[in-house]
Length: 316
Ligand SMILES: Cc1cc2nc3c(=O)[nH]c(=O)nc-3n(C[C@H](O)[C@H](O)[C@H](O)COP(=O)(O)OP(=O)(O)OC[C@H]3O[C@@H](n4cnc5c(N)ncnc54)[C@H](O)[C@@H]3O)c2cc1C
Image (cartoon, rainbow, N blue to C red):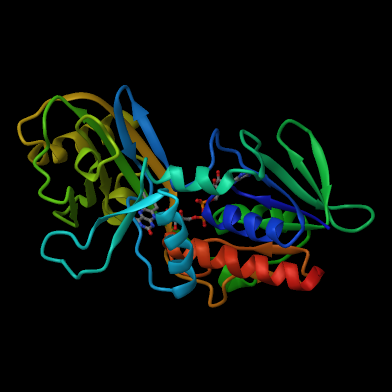
């Protein structure tokens, strides 16, 4: 049984680990330079930023069991128990060295091929699938698990002759425009270092220094979905300048020493498929990710767990 997972985000890595632990041969392929997908941590000089997911919460006991292992291994820690007036007592977890460190931990020991863009997934002559990279390199697999955002996975499925149901095919994603700024002094973000929906522009502002992942002042600004959609086609420099102007009030008088502008086309699914994965009739093309179990870190994990259980039991 050879299984290929497209996408080394949380859903893909969790699925791969589960399948390997059940004795399957698994290759994970990702177009990114590193693993993690929307769990992304970036450096600008000494400044460290989470620029995708900022933290996560836990509702499901199966995810809590995994998080307890991560806590014991020092991979994650509790950042806080709420932001501003929303002190609800529920832990907000973060990767100890940034959110991408969770993905790096999960990828340890797996066969993960990064910087490898999957170009097509086509039926193989003798059953299964032929996966072709943009370099032209091709490999065969018995089962393919697609964990890219649904519109991207749909492209592979469609060219491979697999139709998604209309309700799945039409899942769209909110966009996020983001600004990362390194500062020469402390920001004005109050304890514990985050603001949620503070104004008409931003959905989240995270102080990575207060959060404990950056040795120097470093702030992540995420524009909300409405602002991001409105300014999606604004020229890069102009949109970055607008975000810099909107960010001024949160800088506490400190100056920006370096900055970076980031666009997430597929930030968060606008709605969810009712099951935790979708599979073709043959069960050899399976689609998973956060569009299947909740538009957040926990959803990606639960989808990854579910897809691994289903693929494994169908092929044991
Ligand atoms: C700006 C932002 C803020 C967020 N904030 C939070 C938060 O605070 N808390 C929270 O819980 N969640 C948050 N989320 C959501 C969370 O990050 C996601 O739900 C989760 O990480 C999704 O994981 P995934 O594995 O489903 O998808 P992804 O992480 O997107 O993984 C898919 C992978 O597929 C790869 N891929 C795509 N196409 C190809 C191809 N052709 N070939 C090879 N590889 C390919 C991609 O490179 C990627 O690594 C946020 C997301 C964003 C973007």
